[in-house]
Image (cartoon, rainbow, N blue to C red; front, side, top):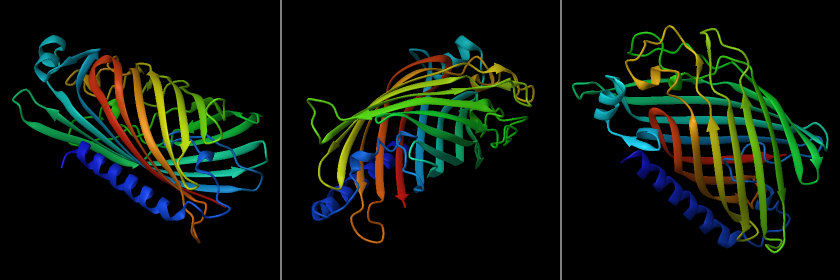
Length: 336
């Protein structure tokens, strides 16, 4: 079974389970509304009251496949003949287990920490047509931030990404693995953003909309003499109530990432596009659809299970590099 079909099967199973359960639980009393959260793939979308806690777990699996330069698709032969790279990446999968904790320091300020465990694997093709894989796994960069209320519908995010993920990963290839295969940035990165959510006319009380601007700003260079590109992401989402316990979500996301600045001298020069600092970053547009389900029964009453599937519909890449394909996110959040 391919990665795409596994994602499709998981998404269908999750949707069927949520919809089936919701038929028997729509009339439970005193439940938090599933409209209280954005799609599960949106981080830092809500605050908590003073003294409240929330723990969360997300599993995210992402696929990148085939090569592109700008908006032009490339075959492996074209990557070799037009750009002079003998080794061509074919496919990359990234699985991330994200553990989160939120605490209401006050009614206006919520503190958050996110701890990722990451597994990466990339298939490559040699000039003779044979294929080999390289990969890395381990803990990534820890992110801490504060969500400060600006208005009843808007809050500001300010935080820091800590360089806890390694940048010296090796596998079967000589030297360090290329930049996309490392597990951390190696730098202290500034996290900044603003989120707005509200009910608007004429959509009515069963539909909530929101928007989020999110940025990662790199600082300095890491111990291997490079820094990753800055990131900016703009997201718009809608959350529509289907019953007391379930809602359907949709969103559109635009992302931009800069090129790598500097170079790791322990990454071999030019055997593959991923080893060139210039072949990183670009612009993407993703569409997502998902479900939020609030559990009705004790002891998990009021906690949330959610799923979201995203598909990249546009990309302009600083290539040649692998194209983004899709991502599936499944999560659980428990507030107390």
